[in-house]
Length: 341
Image 1 (tube, rainbow, N blue to C red):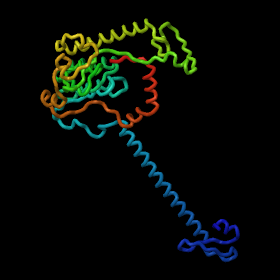
Image 2: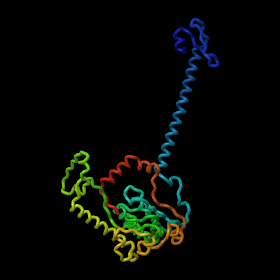
Image 3: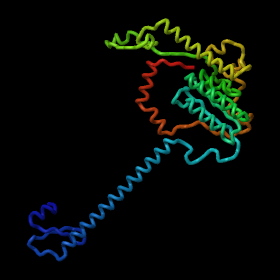
Image 4: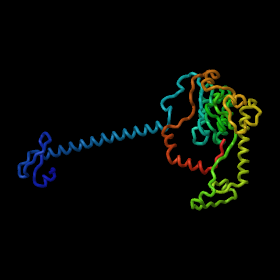
């Protein structure tokens, strides 16, 4: 029976000095000052409850602060509290061109250009290296990097800029490499693929087999150009080939501008073929066999490597790989028309 029930039956509930309850009849005399004792105990419990609430409030505030601080550290990435440029010693600046070249990717034009600009502007930069390991990608992004690298190179004539190829430098990757003063590669690197391609899939008849009716309404005879659910038209293919040929000429012009007389007069160079690093030295696509370490040490005389490639924080990298974005990429891969170097 609890205290409330005891009170209801006319019994008096009290506590001794050790907190142990006892009861007596309601008709018995009450101890003097019992009202004050009850009030004091109620006040004490109230104070304890407030202290507990305050401690929990402080705990959750600290937890929230730690969460926000961690999120900021992840979002802003490296370099918030330390700098790799504390020493005055000359260094070789590295900018990575890694993976597919496309807007919003690690090898986007904005990211590469920002890194090159920062590298040129730093007072301790002895030379700049574009470290390339890319299969290519967007001709627009590659062209933007080529033009901006050439412009920045002209503004900083006293700082050389070389390209160093790792495993692969194909298509748009080589477009970017052609902007460098010289190109180095490993003997086993794969280099070239100077061409343009457009790919997609055709689903003609697929919807009909599934019992799905597609309703496509357009304004303009060619608004459904190369529609994947419609038959391939000869005139559309011819127009697409014209577009690819035009972009290919832009690509070849940039390579000729960047490489100059170093290129062999061999039409296969622009056919889309790839070569090893050793073969690329022979046909003029590469100047010599070398690595970023050998270039920094033997040419720039600055063995210290400092990476100027802008880097996203872990939080941004995590959100960029969530399931919704993955599904969106799959759908775009299957249905979108893409032009790539």
